[in-house]
Structures are given as C-alpha cells and as structure tokens.
Image (cartoon, rainbow, N blue to C red; front, side):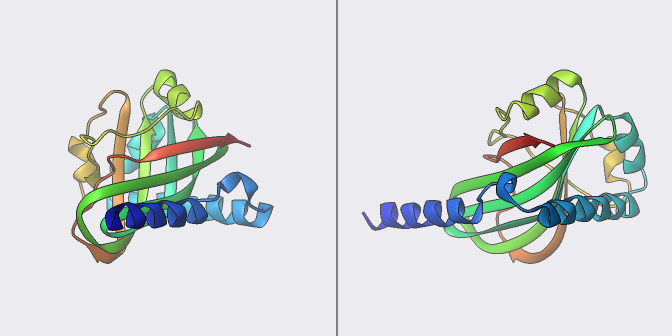
Length: 179
C-alpha cells in the first residue's frame, strides 16, 4: 500500500510538473526555441560531426532542458522545439515515469533525429514513445561518427549536471503541438 501511495504521489507530481507546453505564454515558447538553438550549438561544439546529422536528418526535436530524478520511482520532463527540413514547425513535451533501481537527479539535453517523413509523422501524431530497449548516445567528440538510425530514429543526450545512477530514455512519451 505504501508503494502504491508513493507511485500515486510521484504520478501527481509528474503531471503537475508536466503541464503541457501548449498552455505556455509566447515568451516561454520563445525561450524554449532560443534554448533549443543554444543546445544545438552546444551539441555541435561537443562533436563537430553532428552538424552533418542535422543537415541530413528529415527532422529533429531538441529538448534543451530535461530534468530527471527519483528514488525507486522517478520521472523526467522537458519541453522542446521540433524542426522538419531544418524549419521550426512546433513544440513538444517529453515525460517519463520509471520504477526500478534508481537514485539521484540530473539535468540533460536530448535530441531525437528522424531519418524519414514516416518516422517524423509518427512523432507528430503524438503516438511516439521509447521502449525500454532504446538507448541514447552520450555526446562526446566523434561519438556521432558511429551512430546509426534504429527504426528511423537516432537519439543523443548531453549531461548538464547532477548525479544519477540510472540514465535511460526508455519509457519516454512525447506530445507534439504544431505552431
């Protein structure tokens, strides 16, 4: 029963912290877009090969600030900017709830690249979520040189701060809102 209460509380906190980006003011939307541009520059600065991935991808979503934390039960949330053919088309919301061996908190950036229109359309339909088997590439110099698309999707993360024993993208869900 105690575990159920903890899960319920974490779920409520996660929902309260993940009020959709769609209800945000224009200034908050502008900040998300500006932070996304900064994050893109930081990814390219950390690994210059990523510039080519941005150019060749059909589309991508940049989450410049993802917060994640938990003790046993955890959650993550972040807002991002969505680009198709290198043109801003909308905003997205990332949310994640996880149960298992984990402790701590972290802040990171995440980019999801879409190889094709089909993969991008699946994301835009807000039906997109990562299974537990999905992993992300941590960006370091040259790391993107060996990265490959899996089912039309490729994921990169960059640590911003914090310390957390568990760091995965499995279980993430996304909501898309067209501009």
